[in-house]
Image (tube, rainbow, N blue to C red; front, side):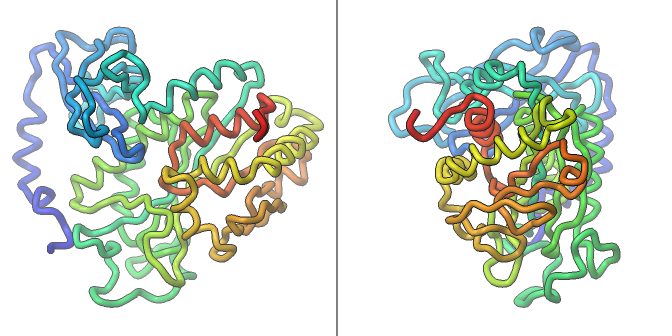
Length: 367
């Protein structure tokens, strides 16, 4: 199998000719939704008579059921637009629209974890809770081999690749930077990007976002990543441990604060929230990857800047803990904390909902 997809090798100059054609005042909208796996995205396109000015101008749509739906599932599903972005692939006035999925009874489909997350965010909105998420991923060829790794072998050991510069240290920077610009054009709140510890491993950060905006923007950032990788003919792998052995796994660390945490004396509120997280460690581990913690077992081993999956730990400026308090936060006595447990393939709706339920709404394992 080729390491790069054949579609990516088509004549892109030809493509640009067609993309540059006038649209006659019409607008192309790409509907994007999460499929039944809860980790893969789907999309399809529709023409509108004019450019929409808000999400309310985007009509709901429907989609057939052969997208990993349960066996025997009846009827189409409804796509309900919830957030609109500019389209960096076909340019203005065209749009990307993130959608919730309802089943044939117009109830939230099984993969629709946004519905309850949004209710939780609304219940806690008076806390002015802010999020930032750090999404790690590994570039992979169509043959399943990490991008630019020697065929049948391995690159040099970890050390020079984190934030590295040079052809022998940064594999696939063109893809990471293209994704960065695509997010900026689309209106995704991307904060930054950097090369990670394992060669061909990268990270981007989204935030600061408030409430439901956080998981919405991260899901769209993931969609843009997969689409950019499609153009380059490679795959973005979000597996928490994509390469076995002495190689880092991939996480999706989450930074969290409330207005009280950010103000003078905020450290007490940070410590209170962390203590609540300690008491619900097992519950959060179940919420922090799409397979109830089974994927994270391969990553949270206590090595490669991770804590053990079985033990809750806290430290200041310590990357090998469950919860890390940044050094500046420890010095200032206010700010935010970083939960380093979520896996790269986590559902950001489930992660953010779990944190708000535990830290702000006071839910316990007995609830």
